[in-house]
Each structure stands twice: as C-alpha cells, then as structure tokens.
Amino acid sequence: MRTALSLRGRLFLLFAALFATVVVLGLASVWSLSHANAVATDLRKRWLPSVRLLGDLNNFTSDYRTAEADSLLAANAGELAASQRDIRSLDQAVARAQREYETIRHGEEEAALYREFAATWARYKTIADDVTALSAAGRGAEAASVYRGSSRTTYNTASDLLDRLTEANVALAARASERSAAAYEQARWVMGLALALTGVVLAVVIAQVQRRISVPMLELGRAMHQLAANDTGIAVGHTARSDEIGEMARAVVVFRANAIELMQSRHGLAQQATMLEEKLAHEQAVTRMQRNFVSVITHEFRTPLTQIDAQAQRLANLKDRLQPQDIVDRAGRIRAAVTRIVRMIDQLVDTTRLMDGDASLFFHPEPMDLIPVLRDVCRVQREISPGARITEAYQTQPLRISGDAKLLFQAFGNLVSNAIKYSPNAAAVTVSAGPIGGRVAVSVGDSGIGIPEKDRAHVFSRYYRGSNVSGFVGTGIGLFLVAMVVRLHQGEVEVESREGEGSRFTVTLPGESGPDSQPAITGRASPEQP
Image (cartoon, rainbow, N blue to C red; front, top):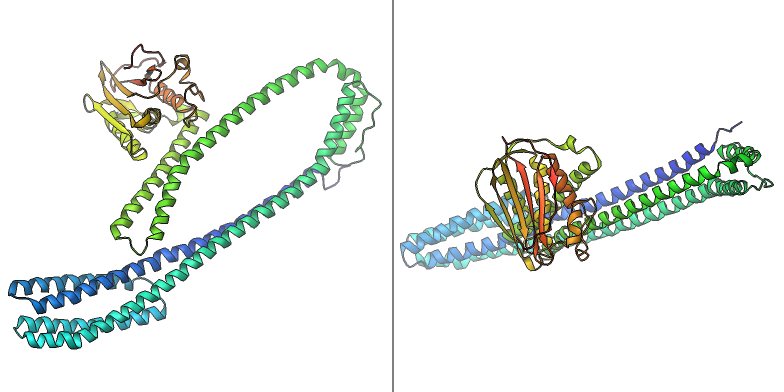
C-alpha cells in the first residue's frame, strides 16, 4: 500500500520549494532594482533640471545687468529702446526659469535660499527700472549714481544668493548621484545573492532527485539490461519501497520471470531504439539551429543597446555643459535605438508566428498601395544603416494590390536588409517597382558578394545559408519568410545572381483586379549581373 508521501509528492515538495525560493529571491531582486530606479529617477527629474535652471538664471541675470548698463550708456533714443527691449526679454526669460524651478520639489534649505534670492531679485529689478527711467528722462548722472550704488549692491546680493543656491543644488545632486551608485551596487549584491541561493536550492533538489530517483532508476535499468542479456540470477533491490520506485522494482521481478519473452521481442526493441536515436539526432540539430538563432538575435540587439548606453553616459558626463538642443539630439538617438529594438522584437514575433503556426491565420489582405510600404522599408533601413546608399525608382504611383501591408513590409525589409548586409563598402542598393501587365513587379538589386551557383536552388529553404556568408551574421530564415509571404499573396519570387558581382531579387504580385495565379518560387543564375 502506498504511503501519503509518494514519489510524486516528494517531487512536488522539492520543486515547490525551488519555485518558492525563486519567487522570493526574484521579488527581492525586483525590489532592489525598483529602489535603484527610484533613486536614479529622483536624480534625473529633480537635481539635473534644478542645476540646469540655476545655470540659466545665472546667465539671464548677468545679461540683465549688462542690458541695464547698456541703457545707461545709450547714446540716443534708438539705443535706449533696444536696451529696454533686451531688458524686457531677459525679464521674461528669468521669470520663466523661476516658474520652472518653483515646480520642482526642493528641501527647506534650498527653498529658503530661493525665496531670499527671488525677493532680492525683485528689489533689484525695481531699482534697475528706476535707472532705465532716469536714463530715458535724460538724468544720466543720477542714473549712473543709482547704478553704481544701490543697483550694484542689490544685484551682487542676488548674485551671491544664486551662487549659494547653485552650489547647494550641485552638492545635493552629487550626493543623489552617490546614492544612485550605492543603490545600483546594492541591487547587484542582492541579485548575486539571489542567484547564489537559487543555485544552492537547485543543488539540494538535484541531490535529492539523484538519491531518491536517479540512482534507484539506474539500478533498475542495469537490472533490466541484465535481464535482456538472459541473466535471470540477478538481485532486484528497492522492492520494499511503497512508492513508484518500489512498484517499478516489483515489476522488474515480474519481468525476470518473463526474460525469455523479452528476448523474443529484442528485435522490436532495437528498431524502436534506432527510431529514438534518429529523433534525438533531429532534435539536437534543431537545438543547434535555435542556439545559432539566439546568438544572432543577441548580436542584433547588442548594437542599439550599446548606442543607448553610450548616449546615456554622455548625457550623465556632460550634464552641466550640455545645451537643451544637445540633450534633445541625444535623446532622439536613444529613442531611435529603442525603436530599432522594438521593431526587431515585432519582426521576431511575427516570424515565429508565421513559421510555427498556420501562416494563413496571420494573413489579412486588403486593398492597398504598395509604394508607401516600399518607401517606409527604405526609410527604416536608412535609419538602421546610416551608411547605406539606397536608390528608389518607381515607374508609377500608386501600385494597387490586395495584400497584407505588415507582412509585405517584413518581406521587403528582409530583401533590402540582405542587400545592404552583403554589399561591402556601402555599395549601392536599388529598389524599383512598376506594373507589368496586370501584375506588379518589385526588384531589389545590389552589387555585393552574390550567391554561388550551387546555393541558388536552396536560398529559400528554411535555415539554409550560402557557402560564402560565413563572415556575416544571419539565421537562414529571412528568405524563407520572404518566400512564405509571397506564396500567401499568390505571387512569385525569382533571384538572379552572379558570385562576386551581386544579386537581384524580383517579386511579382497580382494587381488588385488581376487574376489569381499559382505561387511559384524560382532561383536561377544569370550569365551577367542584372
């Protein structure tokens, strides 16, 4: 009779403990990362804008003092009017910077310094207005006296307060940066500890599985092998166990009585073993393909992530010297890299769906113009490969077809991406399109490495890569996907190539009102480069 704690129960408890450990440690890691992110967010949203705005205030107030002096030194009414316009413009700039600074949360010490500065600056502006008014009234001597006296004293006081406020914000920003680094280091330690503890728990689980399951099963397996060799004098252990292993051991005892019958079925078992070996070899081949695919995807993601990291480090290192337009430019580069990653993820998901499921389920044709799709493909490829030289030549516009814009974008994107990748030294890539009878033809040509003659018949096969592309990253599924998309659209795709001189892929699709045609995929060699 089986006990309550069967082999299944033991396995459940072991893996439940492992799962609980992973969950707890994962939550701890997430909390640690969230804390580090919160500190970094405070630095980005509070201290960096504060320091920037204080720098702007320093510049604007200094220019304001200069404009006041210009009004005092104005030789005529035109120069006086110009200086007054400068004063009004700078007054608006100072007010705008003050409003932005006031929207940021600050501590009591900074707030008190800022309030004192704002009050002193308001007094200074009143005095500066008096200087300007006296200058406009032709009372230059009085204006100069006020400028060198109370105006200068009040301005110096405001400037000193602003300098103290700037120094306080810079010091606090530095401390916030140190807290961010400490939070990041803490997150690293927490995650490292989580990995270590997970490894310990996993080792315990593996040891228990080996002691309670693996070793007994191996012993029973050896007993089965001896029985297969017609050795019926073997001793079978573990028969006293009340779990599944015990049941297996008692079954082996029964098998021992049927050794002769097992020998008669040896031939059938051998055939089954051969089939299993072939299946295992197939699975191993698929695993190697998948490993190569993951390696390529990792390589493709590394470039935009490196760009993002470089731009972020540059922003952090030059935070006190960058102008707003520089920040906008670098943020745009970061967003472009992120867009590239998102696009690669979308393409990867779509490719997996098409290859692993029923492709027709993801095919949603509708009347459309093919020209915008081709232009969008070329635009995206120029963004991904800034050094690429892509020439577009469209005979007419629009080119009306019934198709799935998303799938066609991915298919033509693969063709143009391949043309760029296999064209060394930024060689020209040509994308052309036009009507042919009742159909639409799109050609993508390059002057790259070309396709060897022996490979042309297989270029549209899944996971197949040419013999001359060992120096280029790739998965062997791009042209397979192109062929699948063209087949869904009842179209044809042909390749003309000559090794060392380039290739041209031509996709022909039915026009919107054209008759359906049987799909065809061909690969032929051209005696000359098209």
